[in-house]
Amino acid sequence: MDKTLLFKAFTAELTKNLELALKAAQATYDIATHEDNKAENKYDTRGLEASYLAGAQAERVRDLKETLGIVSALKVKNFSAEDKIGQTALIKIDFNNKESWLLFLPKGGGQNFTFEGQSIKVITPESPLGELLAGKSVDDSVILNGKEYVILEIL
Figure 1: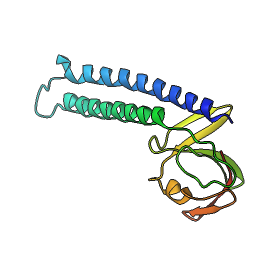
Figure 2 (figure 1 turned 30 degrees about the horizontal axis):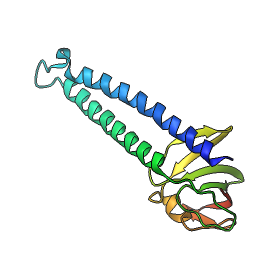
Figure 3 (figure 1 turned 180 degrees about the vertical axis):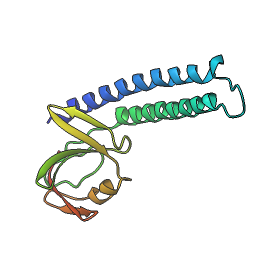
Figure 4 (figure 1 turned 180 degrees about the horizontal axis):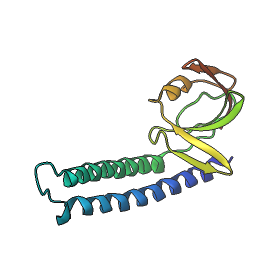
């Protein structure tokens, strides 16, 4: 897999998600501040609920902007079979006889995207699996919640 193209695809996915989140944040802000959402009595919480949602949407926008900035600034490293897992590693693992791809990044954990027909999940060193995989090599395995993950390849 060409990691330069992979990172371009991931950046494009983040950009698309950011645009959607910005639209959603604006829409929820408009709802929260609309005069129809003023409380009619002390039990009417429509406006309050809409403001909570607007706040969560704004937080999502901030998180995506931060992730996009960090990913855009990363120096992509191509790993060899002898290298240990580190930042920007693309990891092929075997889990229950099923192969999966993980992208090891400092931010953006939980994001999923498709590249060259492969589903790729972003993990961070702070995640339980990321913490276990950091510094491991090809053919190493880790156990999380009683389940074994075998490292097949690192790119």
